[in-house]
Length: 277
Image (cartoon, rainbow, N blue to C red; front, side):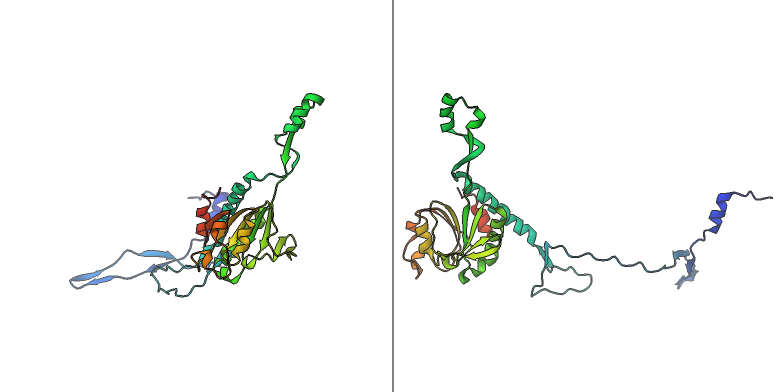
């Protein structure tokens, strides 16, 4: 019988089936003959697959190498910490600081400037004389920067990471004057080009909104500054129960006219946000 020639069969005839290996074997029973098992076919192992290239570790993941990690054998669970999400902690601090700035800066009013934020009462009264349009009776207020002072002395070493996050959040927020003040003595001010030393190391602020992060070291300067400024003190003191026990201080917290908060860690700062008015 003649075979019908089809063009597509030539392509199929050229394809070779994979070679299969037959695994023979049997089981021997003491009471009977050997039972032949069903043959199992497995494709022969081909060339090894190339390994995938591992990408770089993202910047927001910090690799840790902690002491006391236990090594476990194969097949047992491993509970050692390999990394932590540093970026999430930093964003949480920045968000909390931004909310604090929004609460503190609500009552800040500077000199009137052209704008459309509020009505100008003098312009409304003068409108009866010169018949100016209502659009020219609006104005805005010049924004006053919030002063942030951070203690960078050795007594605040345990809060160094927390204060560093506050400084980073203050720079990112903008409209903030950031000062470095070890033991409440102002030494430098943050600018676009870096830290610049200040001429007057005292608290020369007057009628400003000031936020201070530090302990009782140099607390007399902070208490005196609260008499002429709106001051928020996030105190990180853990050595002395009261400022009167501190050998450097002569004033008490009764003379402090600002808002005083106990804040020794990031969790305290986030919790105290509800009490800030």
